Length: 427
Image (cartoon, rainbow, N blue to C red):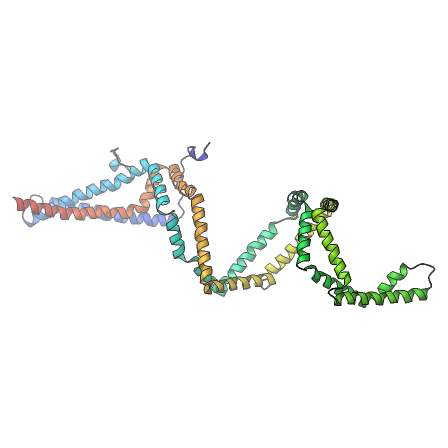
């Protein structure tokens, strides 16, 4: 059932600015007073010059025509909003009686004349949105304001995310998705790409560097660990000599691997990783082991705890930096905004692309939702009370409509004088 087709209850119009309505009401009263004063003036002149000839005959004819024009235009203006003198004359009180048809006509008018693709693109292009944005952001105060507002909104948003939200996200979204997704092809492909681009060599170099630093800086720890695992019957002096020798050889071995990019240990590691990548992609046994490890990992309760801990650490770091007006995050955002503004100022093709994108987005929104937007006009007007709507519309346009009465009085008088002159000329 179409919800919009259900008859809606009549609603009263909301006055957003009573002060503005009062100013319009006073303006309407003034113009009505002027129109009525002209009618009364014409009537007085007509009565005063009644039955006279010559110049006063022209004045009498003009006054008579002025009264006719003023009364006719009063009737026409009044008939728009109510029945003149309360009489139910046909084709009067048009706004209260035909407000629904007027609403539909207004909806069609807006849709046909404002929501067309050519018009939208023309207006967006004329607005030069990207150029104006660039000029506005070029002001350091405005750039700082954008960053401050973004940081404020981001801080509020981060503060609204609770730990149970993260737990629910991990438990009900991430974990089920990871359970369904085979991990072996992903790991195998990633490992293949790492080996192909030699990305792991940097990690190996870092590990070797740290291992060498630890061996050089902790000889006592190294020898103590080896001594604890030596046979009980071995002489202490022999243990010390052996452990010291092993320590020196370990340092030399790490130095050799670190210095030689083609060391056999490196090649052995590359071969092992390559075989692992191939097995993850093709070997069912390896794939089954990887999937089993994944399942055990996902079932471990520490997964959710770790996710919450990571989230807390990241959130606290972001909040601390964002709350600091001179923090790293805000400074970085300010630099990015400033650079973007500078680029907008000098890069005409970028401005054209952004304006084109803005036009495309606007056209898409209008094509997709324009009908719903214009339909709001019809359904809103249909829900208005007829008499109240007439009073509201008259309040907005009635002042200007009084000029019709004033013009009718003046033009009627001029036409009356002209007709009187023609009638005298004919006779």
